[in-house]
Image (cartoon, rainbow, N blue to C red):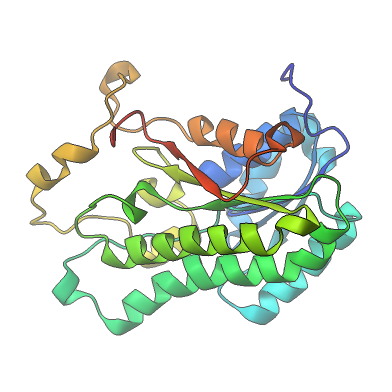
Length: 268
């Protein structure tokens, strides 16, 4: 168990909790003593998270939801808040990634990425606000991306969705500042996740793979500066989960309206 117990008594909802960084965040917050409701479109993924939680699974509730569907979100948030008995921290980690040549991207593909990433973050946050107002040191942690500020080729839809999330996070931080609800985002880069690995039902339905004829010389500026073990190109999802846990805890009481880049120095 972590020596840190920043989440003892805290009630947390994490979307995307069935794989990748979302799953790592669930496990990290459980390890810090929190009670967590994990939401994901993948029932299989949520079962995996529950299995990995071990004895801490007594403090974990899972709910299957499609964050791109308004009614599904409304039902899931009500379920989560009811089980938790309130809400102190919301982590919007669910998302999808599609890579491809811009001119070959269909309208349906572009809209799907925006629907899940940007609209999904909006829907979950909107449905959670009432409970957060009543929470203790309430905080929201959203997921932007290094692609929102730096050039990542073949990821136009994803970059657009994450740029929207980042801008929305700033707007919400100001709007709810006097109510004491903090809003921040993380910008992961070069981190292994359900999206980059192609795991999880939502991720598989969109597909993270680069085009077969991708020009990899375009990626020279996004390689991490810090060394990774065994020649790995991605850091583990725990590298982002630790930052999420900090931002969502009372330790970050004076941090709002900003983003924290977690990319191994690839965008210095």
